Length: 410
Image (cartoon, rainbow, N blue to C red; front, top):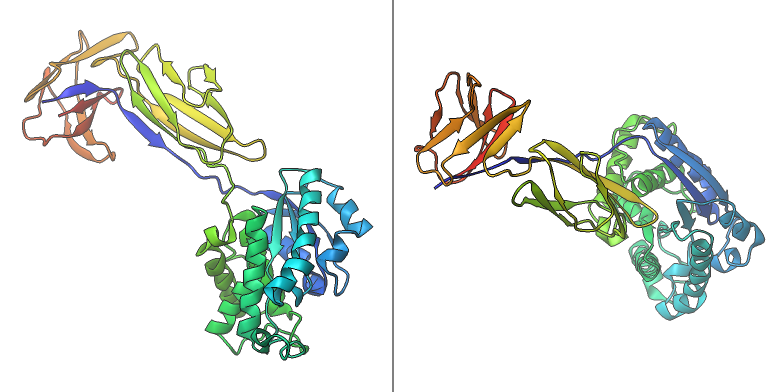
């Protein structure tokens, strides 16, 4: 049994165009070493992207100090930042959980409140730093997990992720990337002689992590290498890529981003029923492709003719937006009318023979596709019927003379 409906096909594109981001960095020498913001700027520039940035990174600074520092607070208020990066003093988040809860978390709260008060669309980014090369020997006796690099790194990871999750923020997992680099190539130095601060390899790896975090793009293949060898740069780019993109949900990267989406079904007499499937959206703007618009979340729309029409949905949450486009062919009970020519396919339902009534139009070619777009057969010359007896049950797209499109369901 076969019935006739009009084709609905999907066209979805994901933009990878150049993007400008604005970021403020609040930290200390782990951010200031090798001018990390400028390394991120240069990486982005090598891929056509732009970073507009500012920073306040006094040596040894802690979140408690940034939370009351006039320079830090004024810089937060100076612009509508896309990101404000928060980096705690290198040891404090690795201390015992109760101490971190008292000495670190309250000041992260203050800074995040300041960020959102300035612009609720700014995303706080917690910059996960790394354990010292051989652990924190100065605090080892009082807290044994700090006696090794692995123990210190585990505590840093836990604390930074707790801050990230508590504030629905983003984590830039530099520390986890350092751990992965050390696992894959223990001989590649990331530290300066003090076994704490980053050398250029460590800062470059961190910059690659930030590029992936902020732009949601891979650093692999970027031409900027900060003067290190191309082999080392390629290795560190891949380490950053794997660390970030293998665990996006863990770092909450993209978790709150808007993703436009919708489903659609053909109703009777040219009606299309649209169902929104967007993620994190609070506003919807539909362009039905014929000049009509709607701001409803789930509109039903009736077209005057079979189309095709390109439907565009723009979804947003007041901060970010995303778009999705779909080409639709409304259903008109097996009748296609275009250029003043009416084409009717019948009977409906159909058993074996599908008849075509095209009036005075001379049919020279008929093509039949499956719904993936694969051409199944092409009939160069035909009368007024098509033999469907050999086709299994399913849905097929029929194109007549390359201009008239219908869909046949068996």
